Image (cartoon, rainbow, N blue to C red; front, side, top):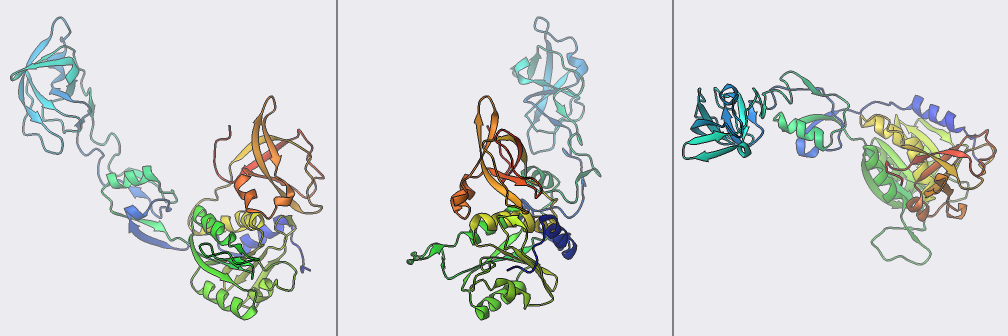
Length: 415
């Protein structure tokens, strides 16, 4: 059996105290590669955005005072001094009684302080008739009105998405400094595991865990390195783990951690270096056989073979560490309130996580329905579950109709 089962809270504290929870380093990459990366520097604007006063409409750049008396029954006639196109400097100046034709986004010519919309004018030859007065700065976006020079516009630690990338592009930056992605080596064990894409031999199943864990690493801000499937043979497994440690910042394995004769992962990992195993079993359900090791400062998470257990324990223990290593804040799962559809019993003395499907039922509102326990190791549980309910060790049961908190696997709108 296991040496000593740690409680859920004890296991979290051991992991937090053993491993560094800070970014691994900084690299400069192109803007096109920066999406979903974490900014490693404050960004201060080196220019005004927009860099010049520009028109927000198609129309005529004018002196506002020339249009003050304009109205439908008493229009004002101005002489056209020239045209201003987008992407070029104005070659005309607006003086009293003059107007310059202008398009949206074009620079405001010298002398003009307003733009009359095209809809409020008519043109004949080199004259424009204005039927509505304009106020000073009307239909003009002033230089620096969006971003001012020397303004700190993005801050270290921000996750770069489409909006942030747009800001960086507006400032003319082709590269930016981001925190390095942690490399997470993923491997599976077991004689029954086959690679997807090949014909499935009798008695085998396709490798579910490596692919779901690789996706979970990406979602957590890491760079997964898939190493393949290995048999439960000490020499081959040791070689695979040595290679995994050499090419990564963290190793995640699945399978071979229970108490059967083929479950040699804990012993093999422990022999790789000091301090070795720091957790050898956790009092939780599912995921009791989970083991964690520290090999020369690198974390090795050896997760159960059941797909639901493997993914859940990854989310609980490995994900926060990967987020910290990549510079992300600890993104806790979104939570929603619901009503238990039936009585739920936790495992005695263990932190229990029950996978649930959320449904809306009148008049109770959102209802959490536990997925059948017979599916605890099935991939369908992962596909069907919206999230999970966490039941602490000192709670005997959750009754039907009792309010519960459901932690969602992904942020979503539950109708």
